[in-house]
Image (cartoon, rainbow, N blue to C red; front, side, top):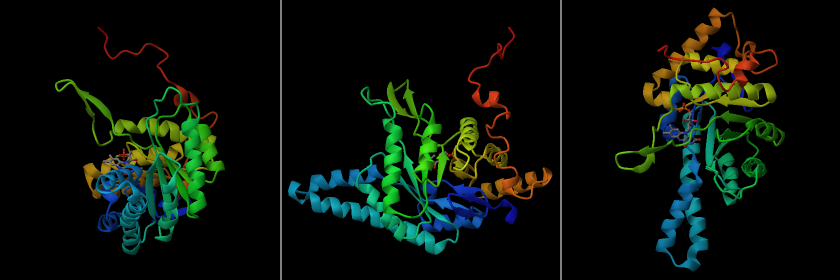
Length: 325
Ligand SMILES: Cc1cc2nc3c(=O)[nH]c(=O)nc-3n(C[C@H](O)[C@H](O)[C@H](O)COP(=O)(O)O)c2cc1C
C-alpha cells in the first residue's frame, strides 16, 4: 500500500505506524512479530543511564576502590554489549527500520555509546531525555540547554539520524524544537510518558499510578503536534500518547505528524491493533479522496486562520456546566 508511505527522520516508512520504545520491543523475535503485523518501524526498548548506574553500585560493593576504573569500563561494556546484540539481532531478523533508544539526563560519557549503536546497524537513534526538575537554584533554560548539548554530543559520535523524544514538562517547547532542528535533530517525538505519581490514602504512602497511557492523553499531543508542525514546519514529528485507534492516528497526521509511536494500545490490543489502525487509515483516505499522506498531513495544524482559538484556548470562555440544578 504505497499510499500509506511516509517519511520520518530521513527514513522512508511504508506507513506511519511505529512501535514505540517499551518492553514490547526488547527482543528480535518480538520485533519480527511487529513487522509481520504491519508496523513500519520499531523503536527498541531504551538503554537507561540508571541501569548502568545500578550495575556500577553493585560493582562498587564487590570491588576495592582502586579497581573501579576497570570495573566501570567492564560494566558499561557489558550492558552495552547486551544492547548492541539487540540492535544487531533485530536488524538481522527484520527488514523495517530499527531505531535504538537511549534514556538519558546527563551530557556525559554515555554519549560515546552512540557510535557503537551506529556500528551495530541501527537506522536511527532516539534520545529519550526526561527528568523531573525541582531545584530552586536551577536557571531558566537549563533543562532545554541540556537537550541541545546532548544532541550535539551524540551527533559528534554518530552520523545516523538522531531523534529527540521530549517530555511534556516544558513551559514552551517550541523554541526548543526550533533549536533542536537548527542543531541537526532529524525529528522530535511528542511526547514521552512519565511514570505517574499517586498517593495511596489507605497505606498513606506515595506510589505510582497507571503504568499504561489513557486515550485522553491524545488531546495535548494533538495540540502541541499542531503547534510544532506550524511553528517549525521542517521538523518531522512523531505523535506519541493516546494513539489507540485509527481515528487517533488520522488526527495526529492531520495535526502535522509524519508518524505515530504507539505503546499502550499494543498492550491492550496486541498486534491485531496495528492492522485495524492501518485499515482505518486507508479507508478514511479513500472516503476523503486522498491518495497519499502528504496530501493531508498538517492540514489542521496551527497555521494562521486554522482554528487558532482551539489550539490556544486554555479555559472555557462562557460558563460551562454539566448540571442544571
Ligand atoms: C510500560 C511502558 C514502558 C515504556 N518504556 C519506555 C522506554 O523504555 N523508553 C521510552 O522512550 N519510552 C518508554 N515508554 C513511553 C512510550 O514509548 C510512549 O512514548 C508513551 O507511553 C506514550 O504512548 P502510548 O500512549 O501509546 O503509551 C514506555 C511506556 C510504557 C507504558
